[in-house]
Amino acid sequence: MAVLSNFLGRASFQLRVAALMLASTALWGQAGTASASAPVTASAAKSPSAANGMAAASAHAAMPPASVSQSSSQSSSPPASQAVSATAWSGLDLKQSSIHITFNKMKVPVSGFFKSFSGELVFDPERPAAGHANLEVEVDSLSLRDAKLSRELRGADWLDVEQFPVARFVSSAIVTAGDDKYSVAGKLTLRGKTLNVVVPVSYTQAGQAQVFDGMLPIRREQFGVGPQSSLLADKVVLTLHLVSLPRS
Image (cartoon, rainbow, N blue to C red):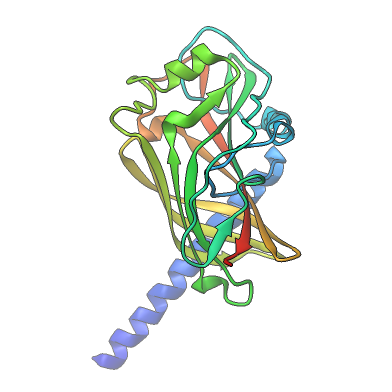
C-alpha cells in the first residue's frame, strides 16, 4: 500500500506540473499577441514613459473596469516618487517598479497605474521552483487621466475600495517556460474573490538588479467588478514591471 501511495503521489504531482506548463504556454501566446511587458511589486511611482508604452501595448488587448461616459486613449503619468515595502530576500527599486492597467472603453484603449503597492519576491534562476512572490496593491491608488472615470471605478458598483481596499497575489509555483521565461502560478484576490491565475514572466539580470516583466489578462466580471457593459470591455490587462535589488 505504501508503494502504491507513493506512486500515485508522484503521478499526481507530474500531472499538476504538466497542466501548469500547458497553461503557461497558452498565456505566453496571449502575452506575445498583446506585445507588452509587465511585473509584480513595489509601492512606487511609475514613469510616464512606462505608462505610454502600456497604452500602445494595450491596443491589442481589450480591458475594462467601470461604466462612465468619457473616453481616454492617453495613459496617465505617475507621480515622481512612491513608497515601497519589501521584505525578506529582496528590495524593490521603487523608482523603476510599476503596475499598470489597461482596458477598452467604447473600443478606445484606456490605461493607468496603481500608485501604491508592496511586495516580496524571492527568486534564484538556478532554483526557480524554490522562489515565491507576494504582492499587495492598494486599489484606491488607481490613477487614470480621466479623474471622473477613476472615481467611478473605485465606487461600490465596481472595485468598491471601501469594502475591498487591497488586491493580493500569492504565488504557489514557479515553472521554467523557456529561456529566461517563467510561469508563476498563484491566487489572485480582487474585490473579495480569489481565483487561480498564471502570470507569464520574463527575467533579466541588470548588474545586481533582477528585472521581472509580466502581463496578466483577467476578466473583471469573474471577480464581480462591475456589470456587463457596452461601454467597458470585460477584459483587463495588468502589466507588471518589477526591479528587485539585493538586500543590504
